Length: 202
Image 1 (spheres, helix red, strand yellow):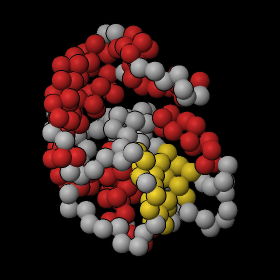
Image 2 (tube, rainbow, N blue to C red; image 1 turned 120 degrees about the horizontal axis):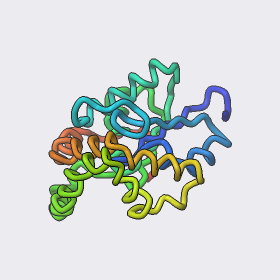
Image 3 (cartoon, rainbow, N blue to C red; image 1 turned 135 degrees about the horizontal axis):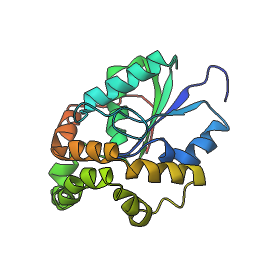
Image 4 (cartoon, rainbow, N blue to C red; image 1 turned 45 degrees about the vertical axis):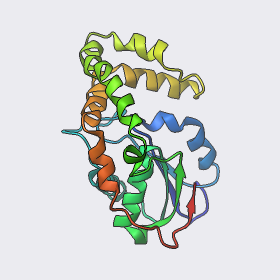
């Protein structure tokens, strides 16, 4: 479980990601430190989210989870892709509880301003996202989850969990809700300031 009194490593997944995505990474970190991953509302085995999750709400949900689970700080926050913005917001809201941040291929608050082609790519995905929930309810998205994605690089149990998650209507309901207005989440992040002297690895 790592050194007593050492910071706990918190893993914050990408958009659409969940605990199994950290399969190899969490095992490696656990050899040296306490490490926790979780499923955001609407992801993995968590309950469905009532609506699309904003940036500040996502950071608040994480803090509430850590408090209720009795996981004390300080934390080293690891954010992958969209998770990078969530850990930055968490650090802005709770600076005394954060020992450092690791940004793993993290999203940028201005990425849609700098790369409007990303929005075009998302528009092209919308037909799939709109059809996915009803197809999942008919059991057909399992075929897509098995053949359309390659999770084979993960440990076998994590691979099986991801296939099960991506076969479920709840996963696609969440993906659709969070894709209808993708800019709103990133606009919240544009008010994030400097990390100051907080240790950072990218």
